[in-house]
Image (cartoon, rainbow, N blue to C red; front, side, top):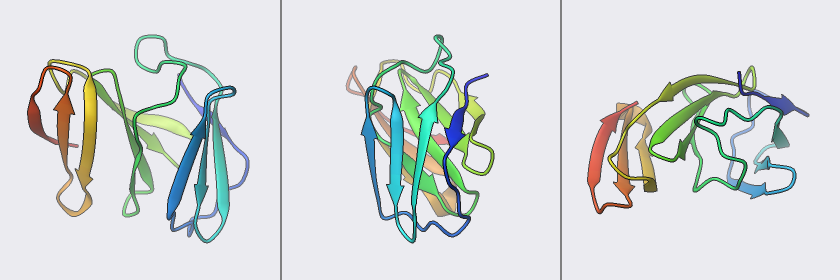
Length: 120
């Protein structure tokens, strides 16, 4: 199972910004505190060892959504593990991604020119 180590976590992070690094693959979130996450194991079928396109944070469920290839990966920020992988969300590789948190819907643009609305 893919997971990342948690250096510090605070349930009231209220992130306002995020950056990522390639080597090692880490995510840093700034808000009321600074939190960093690092991939420990890579699921070669879903997670690729490179910087991701974007991350979308759901403060209602403390979940982080990340598009990978044509899948959407949901990270549980309390445990640092993947809580769900929504496979085959678009015909092509996801190139644009947005989330409407209150409705649990995502909008996806892919490499084949499709614009899709999907339930998370």
